[in-house]
Length: 111
Image (cartoon, rainbow, N blue to C red; front, side, top):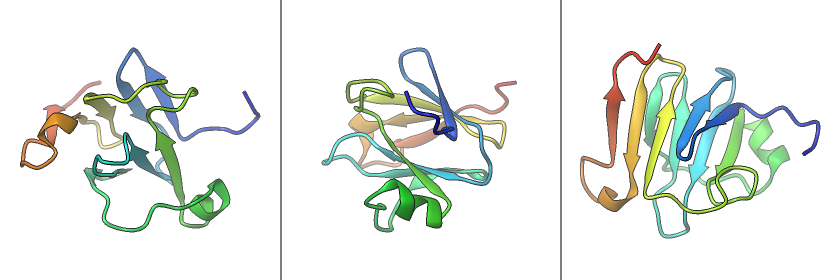
């Protein structure tokens, strides 16, 4: 692993913990799945263009998280939990990507 300090932690088999409020996380699961952005205010679908490299993402104060990469989970996930800086835990259910149940608050206060 490099000396690069990531803006997130991995916990367990399917949880991402956002730890840097200055950087937003762009979460990519599969190419066919919608892209999600994690900000200090919460989690929502990302409608912009995904930065093509780390330098471009850093200029936009973002970090791209590829869920299936070897440094994250090494496989795509159907269910992903995100602990955001706003003290809420979100559940992202990729099997319900076309409905309102795609992103939900799982726990209001996880601390």
